[in-house]
Image (cartoon, rainbow, N blue to C red; front, side, top):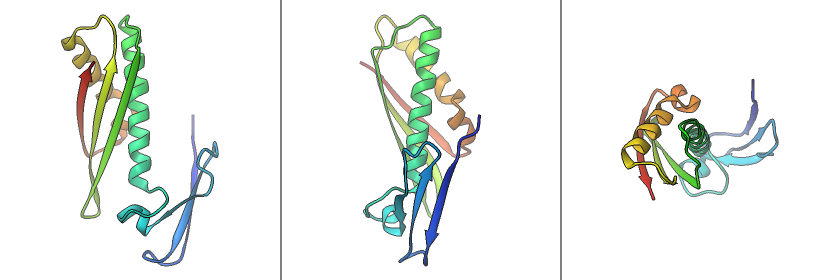
Length: 136
């Protein structure tokens, strides 16, 4: 399987702007700029896209692992916060809230940690990954 996205940039780094389009067109000429990356400007940025990819991948992998362990998931909600520090991405912090009937806290934590370590996006990252998992 291959997926694609295209980025276009015009102008200099501070005053220029660009847009990103994904193959599925879920992002379709979605704007990004210096301000959307380093301030509170309108548009997306690479770190936000990495955070979305990590939260989505981890959540799907956890659902798969819980299902394979015999549990039926009521809900999984994951937030990823990706940190950019001095021009380097240094961390993705996953915060999970889960409703999984019948699972013990201990087994839940083991399965969640396994999903964090084995989801394809986690495996692609070389920076720190932190998981804070809460079973509701």
